[in-house]
Length: 313
Image 1 (cartoon, rainbow, N blue to C red):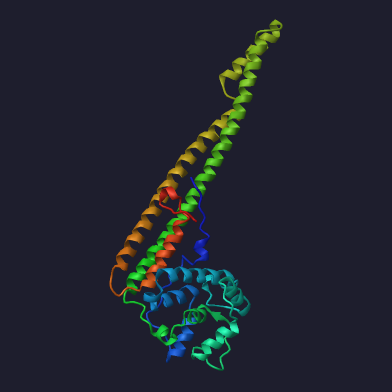
Image 2: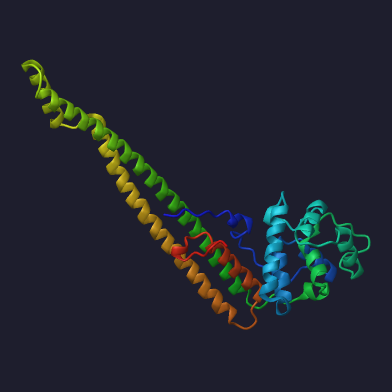
């Protein structure tokens, strides 16, 4: 069976059951903005998508997905759990997306609209700072934006996604076990073939010697031949036992891999069906739904295409 990796489960934070709270804490909009900037990259992006989904839609959702991915890569210390890049990494981020502005220019713009106080000296550049600059949206609207009235459904969808990822890991391990068992079987069969060749060679040699030469040597060869045919030598017996065990193990692990993969496929389908149902409801946090669906799509790249997976291209 195919072996598929799951490193993106870490790279994109698939395994985390984080959902955006419905309201930001804070006595005023500025405090709310600061608290939004403390959220992990993914949550900042989802909040932004939920707030401006009608303007942004799926096309910009994909762009934000790439922003989060890049932030997680550049944040060497906190990875996907981080919330802001240091200035050097922030410049790398801006270069990656062909932005000509500097961090100083970005902050000057945010100060001009009051998102950053005149005396504030942020140590990092949160993703939200860049998003407010990039899309030029009112940050007051952003921090007070509705995150949908379906948080319970979103949490259930996130839980289903987590179950998909757990099933994917199990399927990956089962496929790995099956591959190991297949390799062991090949090695056992090669060893058995070697022992059989050696055994058959000894029989052929004894038969030849039993038909030529003097009476004593012929009788000695016949005795050897009778002994050889009476019972397999110990190395050959061991090789046969090892091969029989390897065959059973290979069959068992292959069956386990197929069953685990089928369960994984069913989990993915169940999650997709539920997301389709939630999307059709009114008051949905469309950005949050899109993000979970996008994670589901990404995870499918690590399933065999013949079993419901999709191409990595």
